[in-house]
Image 1 (tube, each protein chain N blue to C red):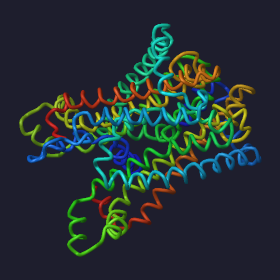
Image 2 (cartoon, rainbow over the protein chains, first blue to last red):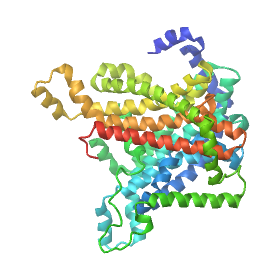
Image 3 (cartoon, one colour):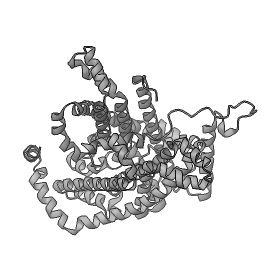
Image 4 (spheres, chains in turn red, cyan):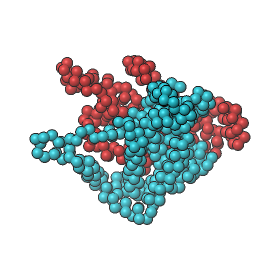
Length: 240
Length: 285
């Protein structure tokens, strides 16, 4: 496979040959440029994601507790959800200016839906017996939410959080591609400069792979975290 | 392999989410109740949408700045001129065309490949490493490279759609085909189904529900990413239209486009669900 890359692709587009890309990569990870941009992107994610997580879990619980509410707002959610985060870009700009705020808003929006919907699903899919048992044992409504519903919904909530992270990572790259020249920082901005100013293909390949690697790393980290947080799920996975 | 399996396992329930397939019970029909309350009747959704519109209108008049939050009335009045000038329809068609080409291309490759990966160790060993390297690349992160390689236009957006739709379909086809109940296979053998037909007559039908989950997820991802791709990398399409109107601060028109995007995405999803009900009609879900 690597040979095909080196000699097949490399002969068509010499900038993409394996040795060029690998060499470039080694050189590049040593410089500060990549890491400062990465830090800028991560910072935006941290803020936007925190918003989304808080709002998504809270609203998910509320909607999960009230099937009626979900049913009523269903048509609104169904139409808003397919609008990709970048579709909100104009409003993000009008509301927050071409700024950090706009990028953070887009991330929060991107991460919100998976977190919200998975929390909702988690609460909804809880066997009714859990709740009835708790009521029979004399638990009050607050105790039920905290001690029964949250733990029961937790696997689903964590899945939502993990997916949300993945989406916010790809949203930040896209957002920085779109308004990068104003933000002047971030991975997407770096890619943009190499794509439309210097046409540096090998560096673009390095950056694209870097984006993928970070996404994968974030995903794996959260996956590990989930396993730690939910040791009782281990058996389930082994069976599944 | 655990990795790929796990991802596919998590995907369907995670993202299909959205509305539950069937409205649970028809509310407000208990005997003894004389009148159905407004929010439980058949028109409850109409009422909700109207009150959301009213709320939006109030908020817009409160803000009083059409370029920050256009009112639903001005949004509504923009729709007719946008359609009659052809701006909206032409660009929607451009997006739809790219979407269909990219999506179909992804499906045509991904379903057989996923099935083949499930059936043959050799295929899997050859195909998996490059695929696993490509999988975590977000579709839009391909945009800069594509800008350099193919430039702004149809090709770029179509490739991004393909990338977005490909992996959900592939993973679900793989998963569906690799988890076919052994009993089916053995029954087919016992009944004398020739080896050459087992794939077509047993494995593919058994994997169908899962394949459709992939189709559904793929359509969602594809539609989302095409709009984003057009925002940067095209001179037509709904995503491009958004940027275009934004430049002239025609925010009411931006909203029209956003709503159209939402509705098309929703309709797509319903179509896939309906097709799956038809094809896998034996599956009660």
